Length: 161
Image (cartoon, rainbow, N blue to C red; front, side):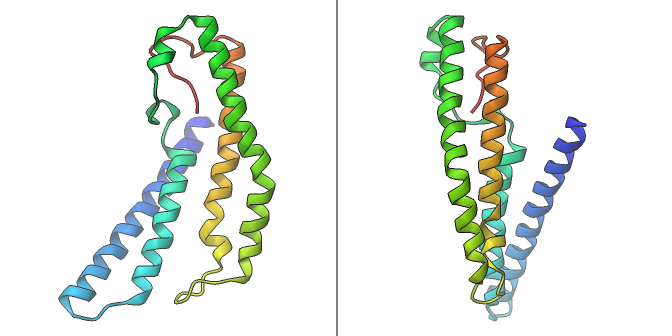
């Protein structure tokens, strides 16, 4: 089930990126090939860029691929790593959890506003931020659970976030 969900998330991310690329090509062709700038391409490219970045951060990029500063991690023992893993994920996941209701309220509030050209409700533009916050909470909880069980504490396996 996890592999299927990851494949689905990857397919959505790839589709978003492909759509962004196509819109970008249409934009360049119209602007420089036909000297006819299309305002909707600018707006759709920005919306898709937001979605691609936040979707990838939430669901596509594995934790081990995130940029980390592991100088201290590699210089301490297993027990210290376990404490660091738990404390770090409590901070990240806890902050995301605390900020989740306010983030949802604001994104939901933005449903009343739309983008200037396509009139897409801004709730749909910024919804992936809420998904990222939920993913941070779930990933942090999973990393804490693994740290308590002693999983992922080797020097070569830096855990989440």
